[in-house]
Length: 145
Image 1 (tube, one colour):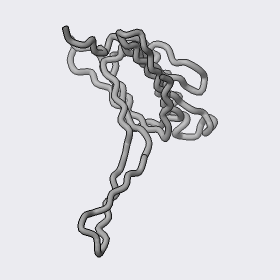
Image 2 (cartoon, one colour):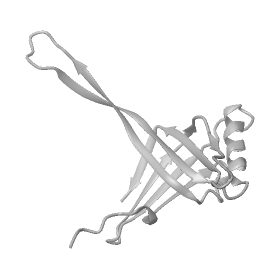
Image 3 (cartoon, rainbow, N blue to C red):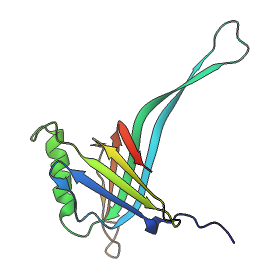
Image 4 (tube, one colour):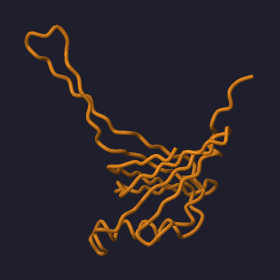
C-alpha cells in the first residue's frame, strides 16, 4: 500500500489586507510559492574547481482563482491604492497557506508584507469562468510546523 500524499483539497489559501482578512477569494485553482535563491560562482586562480555560494532573494508566488463576487475588485483597489500611495505606505498584505496532511500534521506558511505584479483578468469565452491571477513577491516566509 502506497503512502498517503498531500492533495490540493487539503490546502487552504487566503489573503489579509491592511484592513484584515480578505473574504470572497475562495475559488482557488492553483497556488505557487518559490524560495528565490541565487547561486554565486567564482573562479579563483590557483584552485582546480569553482567556488559556490548562495543568496536568499525572498519568495515569489502566485494564486489563480475563479471570480465569484466583487471581492477581487475590492482587493485590487486596495493594492492599487497602496501602489499609488493613496493609503498609508505602511499598509501590509499577507498571504497564508495551510497544509493539512493526512497524518494529522499541519504546516502553516505566512508570506509577510507581500507586493504584487501585474494582475491579469481573463474572460476566455461565454462558457468559461472568469479567471484571475495574483502574482506576488515578499522578503519573508515564516513556517509554523
